Length: 450
Image 1 (cartoon, rainbow, N blue to C red):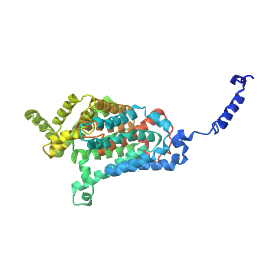
Image 2 (cartoon, helix red, strand yellow; image 1 turned 60 degrees about the vertical axis):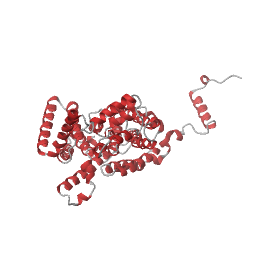
Image 3 (cartoon, rainbow, N blue to C red; image 1 turned 120 degrees about the horizontal axis):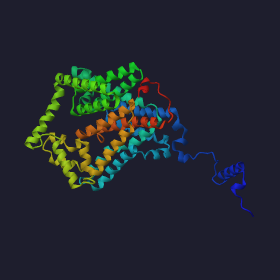
Image 4 (cartoon, rainbow, N blue to C red; image 1 turned 180 degrees about the horizontal axis):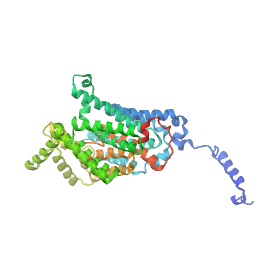
């Protein structure tokens, strides 16, 4: 009996034998897809345009509620994370986790999770400290989804419009506290700088993109809205973080997006605007003058008159005690609570500065992971278009704020970073890869300037 070799068969006969093997041995036709491996591809309803629209609407509603209620945002984002699971192609999603922009947030969460094991603080505080970091788990999901969705401008503009409504109400409440606006949650607006600062600076990118493409009306609309947010930050609720972030992003804008001559004019205009605002608004000069005075008092007296200077000393001392892995998740709370002598010191603890918190809890490993995550995200949104500027604004504001206040693991600030960067990064990934749009194009004119 002679053996039958593939070389003895024609192409048609070999294909027929292969098909017969698949049908008789595996029990399925050769062209039948493997539904278990395909993930969402095996559920037609999960790829239906209506279901994808629901997913995008959940993200839009989360962005709308973010300036008003972080509880509502959390509920909506948890619902979105569950609803997006049936749409995932798991092979593609697992491959995307190899991207540094996805892998590094997961690594930071894992470090925070296992950091409970060597924490110097109580077990309960360690578990509580892990919860805020868990928001980073949604970044890979958001990047994956908005790489396929074309409704990212809806999410970004919904957040801007919602913040604009809150800004208007804060203006009304400031002018006449007896009005109905005074009964609305505008106190949060008066104390929440990051959404307004973010909108003031992020809208500059779409304005420039609209001007470059000849969309004059859209460019003026974005520029006008940006000016309103900026005036609110300078005249109503000036803050040190907002001033530093604005200065940093003006320099970045001048370097990356304009010519040398226009950069000089832009910096001169910014300096003139800042000088006029300084003279016109005592509220703007007061926090900066107070900060300078506190720093000088701290240097002269050495009694920690400035809030953050002692925290930096504690954080640096903690690195010497546990340089590699820190004191563990949640260990930052008992030392600062024990050293505090009053409400001011409790408010100015190292929990307020993200870099201090990371250095204390997770040592150099945490600091390196956090810095690497920011670098990978900057690389992700490095484009010069409107969406790239929005993503860069979010990252720069987070980096600056991490020296002065909690951001990545904060409630409001953390959601802004995760949702904003997830949306902007997803669009950047799609444009970089040249993927075809997998969702219907939105009927919104603002999408073209992003």
